[in-house]
Image (cartoon, rainbow, N blue to C red; front, top):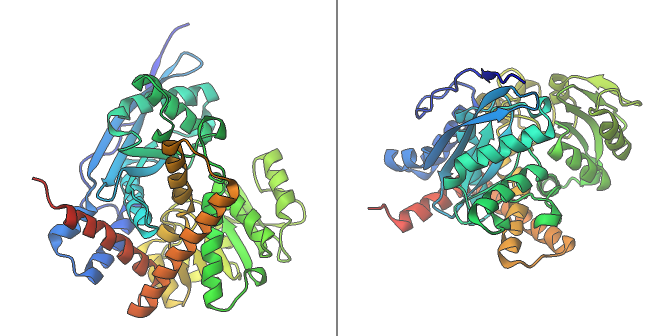
Length: 434
């Protein structure tokens, strides 16, 4: 068989982005940090240190396809800040992945870990690949090659990966095995989100979703509204959105609309979520579910519901969509779903936003529990994990809400002030080397 080589277009420049593209995830992350730094009164030097990634790596990831053809992908890993502990963050497989997106996600992970008081810094990784177009064996080869290329940067005490968009527990098993084989012994704590059979944790698969419901319930309780009395719309029916819908429905909330990349559905009386899950398992999409009307992703954002959960991708609530939001609460299940311009519109319309660095932190909280269990080789029960997660999320929400009320801040600004301050204090206490 003749082997041919195909190359994807060159990756974007890897030079630091002092002025990221307007409306991009990195521009949003920088704007949020700038607001927190101004509130905290930080000088330009400290602000710049907090804005700049500590380490970055860009690697070529060649793949020999099942057909014999060779293709080339670009992979990235960014450690934004490690003042509080080792880097922690997901591995994303998506065709739009570039270094600026990874920088933004790593920065948000830094604040997220600090907000929920985890001994981690923020990191993130990604490969610019559409996993839907490749076989399982091809994805395994991509994962193992990517892991081999970034191996000097990762480890159970330096940088711990987890699943993200386009990756799953199996991906993490491949990462762990590749790392372990090269070190000569099994090291489960190098990743989290693994299958249970190789050191994963009970409760990890639904942790982000459960955390979303915990903070939603806490926000509603402050307004005297029971969770069982609200209507919910969820954009994104992947690992986070689907489980969030299940948990919301199980706790009595009325899930009236959901969507995925192919389209959406709505039923004002509430969707039969268990039956919808079976439909998605069978067909691969929410589209075509009987007993519901079609709705587009953009229309879903503007539905007259109590709670809107954007759980898909970054930047969906911007200057063109945020002004149409009728929900009283927006709970960010995705990372960076609201741009700076979108935030301003939501605030103007008195929409309460529970920010991503708090709302979707349940995943990294239970990742921390998995890491602790792996290091101790002692495993907790599912109820122990559920109780610890709820306590961690509700405590963090209470701290953020208290600061917001005391200082007249939005929940986002309060969460970022808490996260940024904890990271900056750790940096200042440790001192500047040399």
